[in-house]
Amino acid sequence: MDFIFKNIKLIINIVIVAMLTTIISILGSYFFQVLIDNYIPNGMEQMLDIVVMGLIVAYVFNSIFVYSRDFLLAILGQKLSTDIILEYIKHIFELPLEFFSTRKTGEIVSRFTDASKIIDALASMVVSIGLDASIVIIIGVTLFFQSIRLFVITLTALPIYIIVIMTFAKKFEKLNKHQMESNAILSSSVIEDIQGIETIKACNSETVRFNIVSEQFFDYLNKSLSYIKIDSLQQALKIFIQQSLNVIILWIGAKLVIQNQLSVGQLLTFVALVSYFIDPLQNIINLQPKLQSAKVAYTRMNEVYLVKSEFRDENFNYTTQKLLGDITLSGINYQYGYGKNVLNNVSTTIKVGEKLAIVGMSGSGKSTLVKMLVKFFDPTSGELEFNGYPSNSISKSSLRSYINYVPQIPYIFSGTIEENLKLGGREGVTLKDINRACEVAMIKNDIENMPLGINTKLDENASILSEGQKQRITIARALLSPAKVLIFDESTSSLDTITEKKIIEQLIGMKDKTIIFVVHRLSIAKKAARILVLDSGEIVEEGSHSELLAKKGYYYKLLKA
Image (cartoon, rainbow, N blue to C red; front, side):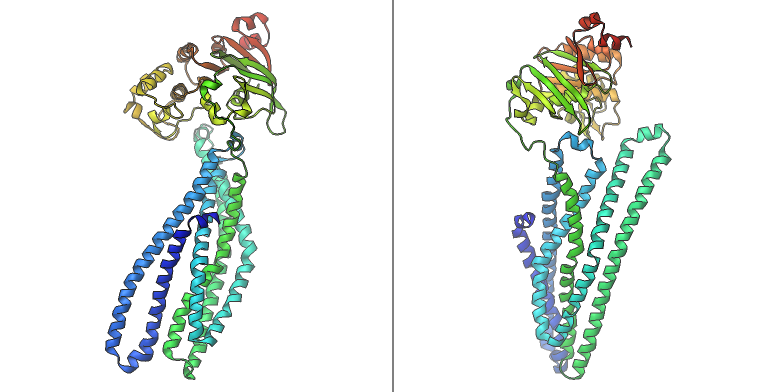
């Protein structure tokens, strides 16, 4: 209801304009009565001319009012869209990373379609409550004075309409839910297949994936058809009731005319006005299936809203200078859900300006550990401090300004190269800064060789770039950020060894940055001042390359493997 009260002035204007169109329509209906009962029998040509000219002028205003009503309704729809859909998008951006790891993209996106059902229901409710109810009362009173007997007959249709609506209520809710769920599954599969099209083609599995999507598509069609069948049946019954009502009114009305209890003009006017009475009445009754669709849609959207924003308990916002200091991990444990621990009693201190490498076999907990530093995950137990400040006292926005995490799989957004490089960049980034970052990332020459240089437009995930070029752009992007700590999680895995070596050497040469490398290639680890060796979520060894080789322990075995 907050959405309605927020736009109450607009709604009042819609109701006023719509009421004016209704009044003009009622006056037009009465023209038939006076035409047949007075003007034609009495030969009142002059009066007829005046009334016709008056009606034409009234219909000109009526057209203006109709345009105004529809335009205002469109504005209301846009305002509701802004309040509902944009709020949903904003909430999605603020959800923690765990949410996206357990949901398919299509399931999240399908809620936008659900939102349109809520908007439609709210707009219909506004019109029905504010306008249709008023018209029903006004026309009802008019019909009552026109003919009490015919009005009573008209009212008998109301309980029949309600019975028809209530009979289908539960069926509509069930079919609506099934249809929306089926649509979400189909959307997820299509998005997943498009994103993985290279793998599909490489595995020669186009037919297999198409068959899966085809099966889901026909399931969605069948569920949609089931809904349409029930809806069409209900609409057919409503039409039958309305047509039967019109016939009965004409039948009884004709008898009243024959018995001189009603004039022909009054009967025709009553029949014309009945549609103005029944239509808004049907609109009110038809709110039921729309509200049911909106209820199901709201429930589905609420499943996402129930997941709290990761910024809901934001604590202190610190500057990067205030957080500048040692990063201390004490007895850190972490587990996904109810599974076994991914990290076990991890304790270490990362010094300011240190160049650290984290190595280990796949599944040893390397990525989980560094993602914890940017609060993608919170420790199950243990303490994590930045320059003495506990991580739970630092806002995520502050921490992510201080630490920049670069993942192994780079993502480039549609837009220019410059826009991608400046994403999350510090204020006042100059072209000189961009060139310097691109030089360090060894991507400057590649950009200059492109048609429009730094202004070259890229499509979604930059299909014109190689994986190595994408990785280098994300490295340059990180260098343009205000972060004092840079985490590279296998961020050079797609590069050739020569280019990788040059980039790593330049990164290690940065005195003002703390840099953490998560690596499989131990050639990178050799260059780091200190190496952490993880196995099954535990730090089993730490030290420089030469120190670890001398121990001939787990690191030595990895190097020789």
